[in-house]
Image 1: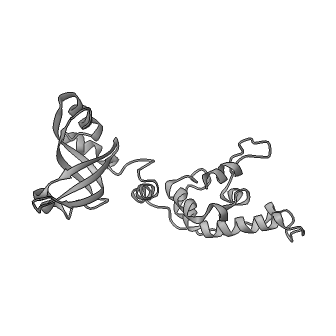
Image 2 (image 1 turned 180 degrees about the vertical axis):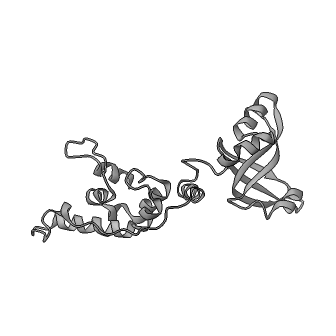
Length: 220
C-alpha cells in the first residue's frame, strides 16, 4: 500500500511531486487498490495533515475519496471522451465536515493506529506536577538502575496493556505495559497490589506507580 502511494507521488520522470490536496491524492493514487484500512490508519496517525489538518474529516471522507479515485481511474481508462473532459477535471465530492478530534483523542487515535504516540504524549500536561513529586521518567529510571545496579522510584505512565497470569502457587500476577514521553516499559505487578489496583490498571489509564528496577547482565 505504501509503495503504491510513493509511486503515485512521482511524475513520469520519477521526480517527487507532492500531493497538493486530498482530491489530488485521490486522482493520482489508486485508492481502491491501496484499500480503506491502510488509508484509515494513515488518517488516524496524521499522515494527511499537510493536505487537511482535520483528521476526523479525512477519516470520515475516505469512502467518498475512494469512490472519487475509482471514478477518475475509470475515466482515464475509458476510450470515450468524458462529459467533463479530462479525468482530472471530474468534480470532487463534498466531504463531511465534523469537528476535529480534541488533542487527547488525536493522541489516542495515533496510538491505536501505529502502537505509539507521535505528536505528543498524554503525560505532557502533567510534567510539572510529576517533577514536583520527584517522579522519574522511564529513561531516568533506566539510567539510574544501569549505573547503580538498581533503583526504587515513582514513575508515571499510560497503561498500554495488562496480561494476568497464575503462579505455581495459584496466586495471580500481571505484566503491565506502560508508556511515557521517553519510551515504553513493562512492570510486574504481584498478587497483593494487583488485587488492590486491578480496576485502575486498565489500558488508557494514567497512573503513578512505585517500581523497583534491577540491572542484570546489561538489562534493566
